[in-house]
Image 1: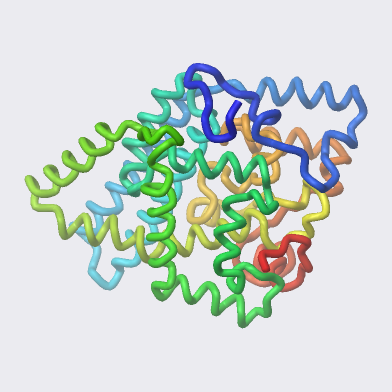
Image 2: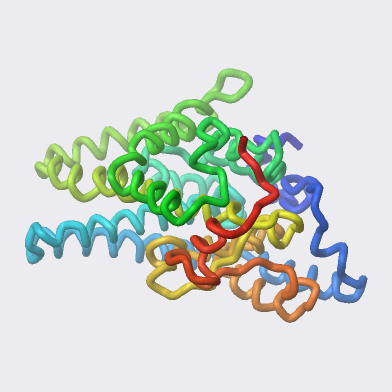
Length: 349
């Protein structure tokens, strides 16, 4: 089976196909045969798909976006415009996380259906496609932190930003660069990578429904023209996407695999056990359960916390897994603390 293409009506064994052996100790290899079987039975249970949960989260995310925009237009003084901008950007990230589950075939067993839903309600609004993201992201899982990891290779184009540890001042400067518009260029790079670059397969055919995509943007432009909403669209959708979403994605991306020892499968990514408001802003829909996700990418996001809680009952997991209690701040337990103190095995230069 090709790394980049999966039969539409067959749910792949993601642990086998997209999770090649790493040059680090594996968690399951430390388990007794009895524990291993118990764990695999639990994983099988947690792999059960419940599409209605994801659909309900899509509805809630869009409700929050619309409510933030409408309430801001009607009641909020312009001085507080940053509030809906942050809220909308956080939900744009949440939509990308839902698309991410479709990429892993954990939305629905009907892949054309899940790709259609996530394209129309998550990917197309942010000018990318589920299919393009899948082409790159599944290779990231299979070749994590290696020379064949496409995510790592992109970061190698700008190694200074991805080299850790850094001093506190260097970390603050890195984050400040995103806050003051430095992430705009990165967003356009992502759009090129996930919207245009991989739009064709090896046979020169579109890897996604180009007619649906064109129809979506025609309808969008027609809607904005009909109701004279171009200004609102720019202010409440494009500006959050260009100015705030890059910061969120930067912090999330750093938090996924950087500032970590990288000597074991359980410390080559991190789990975020963080306050609710940090989850809302930076790690929606359990995307912060990154250790569990990389070990068992076939578990849908709404079951990742259950999987982590179950695995914490095993000393082989509990003693090694890397978990953080905060993203912000330089106190122990925070991701920024790791970025300033941990000497990682992972290098981008």
